[in-house]
Length: 370
Picture (cartoon, rainbow, N blue to C red):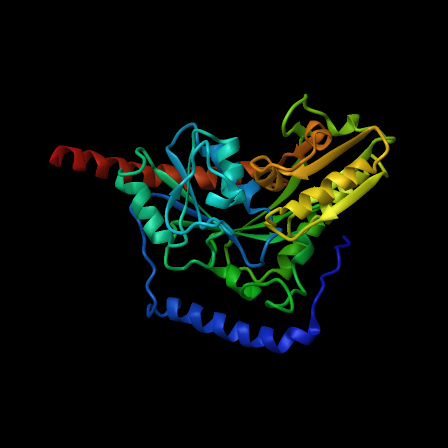
């Protein structure tokens, strides 16, 4: 099955080689025990990737939340990429993307009863979450984007690999890899993400041959499913099928790879104007003026569509015109597994079920000593 081409900046390959050497030395220091990793007495699940951006970490975190939140006290811990604060922060109903980062804000908005926290020092963040001083009842911690944060030794590690980037990528800055593809061998579970809907058994076998898997390492395949459009400020949900071929769309993205989303919107209307900003972009007054002006030029009917991650930033700032606010929608996404989804769910549940009792017994013992 055809894949999108991978862009390699070949002039930067010498720098990538040096970067790869540094990463390799660091990983060996952890492997040899010179740099220490810490374990914790509760289930810690790491969800990460080998490349920067675009593999779907947040939707997979949300998948795990839906799987576990009704039975366990869950906390999500992120570093809060591109936030303008430092140290440990708990997400609240009034948090902004500047406080905690756009992805943690997105998770907190969708799962208000779940504890969401950020801390660039993940060991410190875990200690605070389980101390009882900030929040009570945490039994399971999901570490978002923590595959390279090896100071924490998770009990279960998931690494995500984008289907279009199974091979041929290079280390930063020539490509998008944070570490070589061989680094996935540290993971307990590998998930190939953003697969085509019609991915067949032969394609899965070919993908498994391309990946440097360890013997017995679990491999799963997931795809993105787009939900109905949700108004960011006012109005009703809008199914994608109701957009209409005559509708003009201003697509607004600040994500690593907006091409799959652009293609999805073009399935419903050919009239798409795309404003693309950098990943995790903080919108300035000039950006908001550009958005307002772009929407004003569109013939009607016209709507604005953005991602959930961008919506987390746009919903808490001023400067959008009344017309844009009244016609601005976010496009929620979910992931589903193409094969053995029940097996994946059971692997996660089995790990949690076998480790949560240890945490509960510890807390009981602490109470008896009080």
